[in-house]
Amino acid sequence: MKPVARLPRSMTSMLPRLACLAGALVLTACTTPAAQAPKPAPVPTLAQMLSEADAAVRAGQYDKAQALLKGSGTAYPSDKAPWLQMAQMKFDRAHYGDAIVDALEALERDPEDKVANSIVAVSGLRLSGKALADLSRQNNLNGSLRSEAQELAKLLRASIGEDVLLPSAKRPAAPAVKRPAAAAPAAKGAPTQGAADPFSGLK
Image (tube, rainbow, N blue to C red; front, side):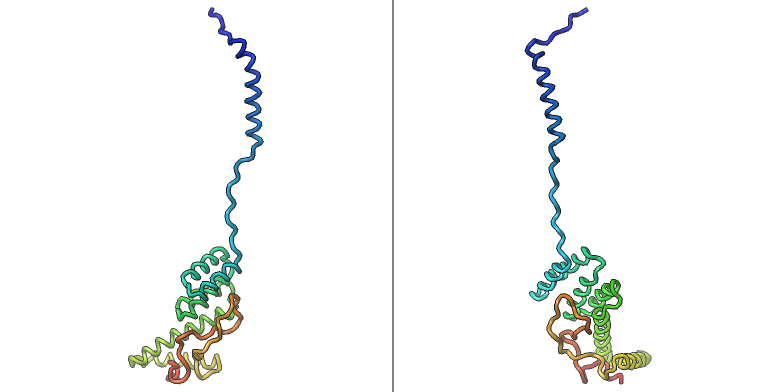
């Protein structure tokens, strides 16, 4: 039987110290807090995002305003304000089809919103007026199309109580971020009263 190898006396005396040191390291590791992950940047409030988008519109930076409003729509999906502001911006630039799409998004969130309903109605009239004017110039406004247009014109006149369906091109100053509950203003380049009204020939 081979004799058991013995550690030198100096090593034997160091073993308890090494054990204590190892235990102390374990305890220190347990009590040291883990490195904290960096906190994400706070999401701006809806009012801040709309205000920044409005400032971009006033500066003529429409692409930036569009991106800001889309971002606010994603951050606050249940709020109508970003969609309403996008619709107003596009209406003011005579992008009536896009204005209708965004106004309908606002109406999905608030079916009673008067500004959104006004944008849809007036934008539709703008598009219809342009199409009727184009057809009139081409002498293609006849037959059943003319009859339906006349009936629609009568219905619209009865609904709004006006002889001229399209409002004049004059519009008030640009409204603030929170739009008042009033009819949408006429856009730049809109048909004016009188002979320029494409519905005037349908009386």
